[in-house]
Image (cartoon, rainbow, N blue to C red; front, side, top):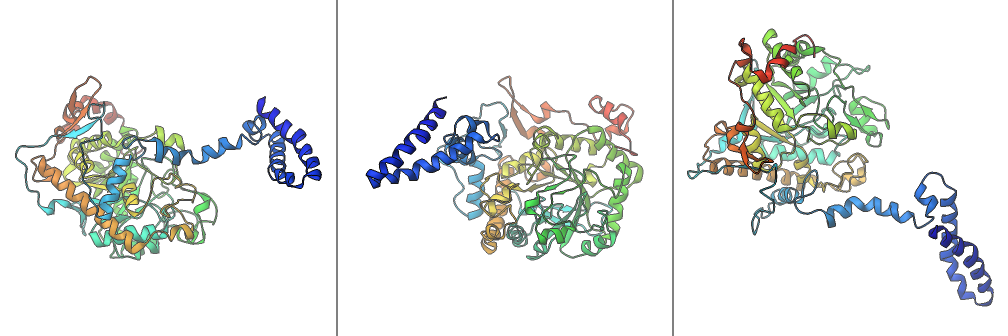
Length: 526
């Protein structure tokens, strides 16, 4: 091969000749600064069995790995177009940055999207726009069995643990929640001191690892739970069943992030991967879940209790609905996480190939609760790539009462979508436990940005709602959202999907699209 021959020539012919030449003309020895390292590195490459490319292309092959190392940055800054980036394109990232900084968030020269492409979504405007009251930005979280309902914002910080995010990032998010009057979900990593430091409202998430209320054996500690759940700052409790980025897989915190502080808060060994179990040990089956909901409600003093899940087998969610009917116990809210949701670390196949996308999941959950006559008693929260006022319009039209945002809030704190969340080398200091990197997040400054982004997004939400001729969020309907399909036409979601009547699953004539799953569903088991 040419590269090998070149190596042989430079190392075994030129190197000795230059050494001899140096005896007669000393400046020639400067060439050895290049030839000696070249010969040593090349010899190592040819003797190694670790990399085929280096073995065949000594020295030169290293450029391949150098380019591979910087290729994500090259793609992000030089290759991707404004609307082609993933998971979030540059248009959305730029909009979040502008709103968070209080800068101009308008756009010149028209849309950059191809509005004729299959899958493009839009809403219909009205010739009679309405003035939407600011009160539409809030909704009460707490059903008929809740003693301490919570007045929540329509947009809140989605579940992100201390451990996945740095201490300063957590404090900035919570500070923004405090300033803006919205809630901050802790994620399954526990209620850390950093979640409490700024005084923002908290939704405490309880995952399968029971971090923050965990026994030495890894089970649920009811005394530890009761002590923390009764804190005034804790406004609601969320039981995490699964998440869209890795459904039916426990949370993953890489060993690189498990420092002494994280280990103490979570009650786990230092510097070891923390992988939560895929299922809960505190209860079993749909009926067990409902009893656990009631147990937490009593121990928290009557605060709103709900659960979060990504929809998979539809019969299993219908089984939960049957358990609600049989036990008479209702959650105050259900958080529906779409398969497009984000995470700090997840197995590739899980994040790419499991779970139902958010729009379809919202329609199914909304239909299911209506079908059993419980929709008016349970709030639906959605999460999964919510970043703009239009995203909120779309999700609320399809059945959500509230929206959670995670990665958009990270952008507001300073995330640049470097995709290094699972390496502990986040360049912006947001998703890392490296104290040097983490201190780059300026808490007083970033909490203001989180607050501004939240308020600007809700303002956009209200403006769009009014432009559609709606005075209330409850006026939104699936027919208001249109999607371009493969036959070069547009169809509304009311045309693309079936929507059932209240109580339809409780009749003998169960709608055909639900019949098989409803029959298969059992309140006793999933």
